[in-house]
Length: 374
Image 1 (tube, rainbow, N blue to C red):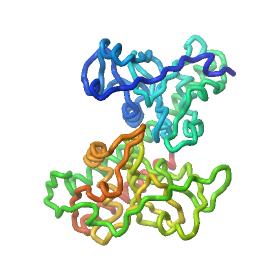
Image 2: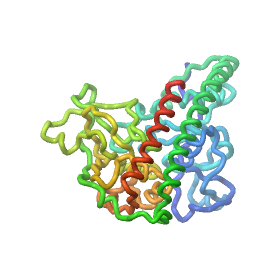
Image 3: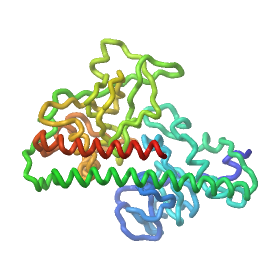
Image 4: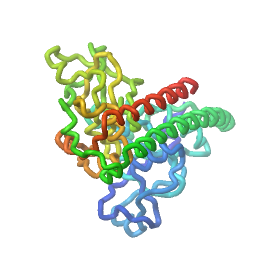
């Protein structure tokens, strides 16, 4: 066993002032948390392209830290910590100050072996218990890693390569099914605001009966609470409910109607890291659960189906719009309930919405079967 601090070099990110952002060429790529997420979602291990580049002169001006090739990078602050996404730098580069990098001493620690070790670590568990999760360098430095000889490390890495390939293949198949649903949505309804199909238009406020924030109370600490507690990490980027990690909460009975969820509620993640604000899903269970304060509960009227509204908000054109709307502050971004209700939307007939939902349900069954096989 060895401490990470004894066989790795740790790198902090660099503050990235807005005036230096947006350059499409330069000596160094400058990666943000969103670049790591995009790489992982596309099935890549190595970072190989950025939306931002920076010159040598600008690096000096901002006192930037150069991160070397073959460094494992990951989010260290914000809700993205809970996503546990890792990538490896393919060149010398910079990362923003929401990211941390760790480079192994490759004479003693195989890069592949270390990468899989880092993927295994649950950053949420290591994060400080604050409103905005953050992982400290000192905590990571003190972690022990099993350190067999290099031949054994490579043997383990080969085995994990095979497992990772199967997982990525299944994930790719599921993402292709998600893309099929999105394509069907655009085929049936068009994009917004173009509204090629000339549907009736309005705003989300026209389609709701009740819009509320979840509870601001904290999850039960060190004991089982009475109710399961739905948080923002229980909503996936693709628009599904993920209950693999669920906390519990105790809450007075008279508060339950204001913050509990029921089947058919649309759940909108209002506060998160900027690229994750607006994750939306439909609550499709009958179990009593309490909703956390960073999520908005939407109950719709008879002009729209919950599944249609959720799909609309998860479309690429909506995600781009939400990204432009949200206001960032201290590593988090936010869209409040009033801003959400003022979002423009087209309103197809219920019969057309039902046809789309039937198609989506059929695809969801296929996704479930593929996940079971995996």
